[in-house]
Length: 130
Image 1 (spheres, rainbow, N blue to C red):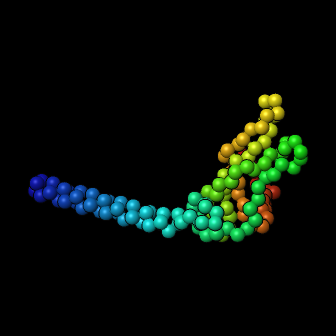
Image 2 (image 1 turned 90 degrees about the vertical axis):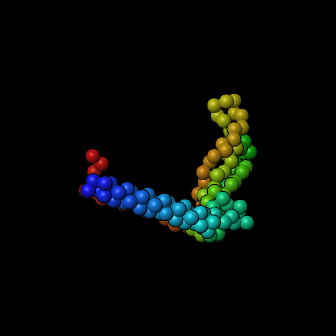
């Protein structure tokens, strides 16, 4: 009886391993197909990932005075976009106030453009942050 039990456990183990292997293959194929559907590059913006074309305003920082103290966007790479928002990596040039007023470049300034909206924060007067 123990030999029959061992054979039965071995058969169940093989079935379980086959099932896990099959599910893994299905998940991998689904992931690849999803990447093909949603990683289509938008030729207008050359965005890395696009879920639709963002048609809202796209802002960049510009120097506001003759001394360029406020900084200025000198590069703009779209990372991800949808019809509702766009996330970009800006390259910003600004004065380095710590080192003799020299110009410095920040290469990884994340910038989010989105359609006009308001943000509302509501706080319950009875709540506390204990």
